[in-house]
Amino acid sequence: MPAKPLKRILYAEDEDDIRVIAQIALEELGGFVVKYCNTGVEVLEVAESFAPDLFLLDVMMPEMDGITTLEELHKIAPLKKVPAIFMTAKIQSNEIAEYKTMGILGVINKPFDPMMLAQTINEMWESQP
Image 1: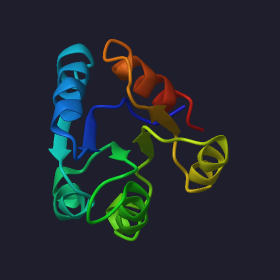
Image 2: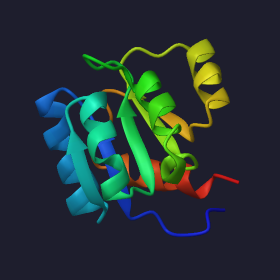
Image 3: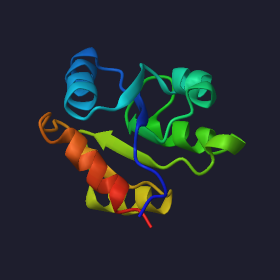
């Protein structure tokens, strides 16, 4: 069980329509404080100052994918232990296993159910050791 409740999420998604739906689901339904970024590069620029509890990263983004973004984030000392959840439309079971070796809490398939997004993230958060 995590040491503290989940409040601050840094979310990277390059598709505007998905980001808008997630914003409503995360902020209005979930009550989270969320910082939105369009690219992994943008995430790296704001992550340390935002001090998130969780990274929510789209796997497929231009410039830098979610996997590379997470690898780079974990090179920054204060962010090294911040957990992550990946979101993707193209997921294979062998990829999920690979992602879990990177220390992610889970994978959310797109399209996701906006009414269940916050609950799904909370369940993944609560399930961490």
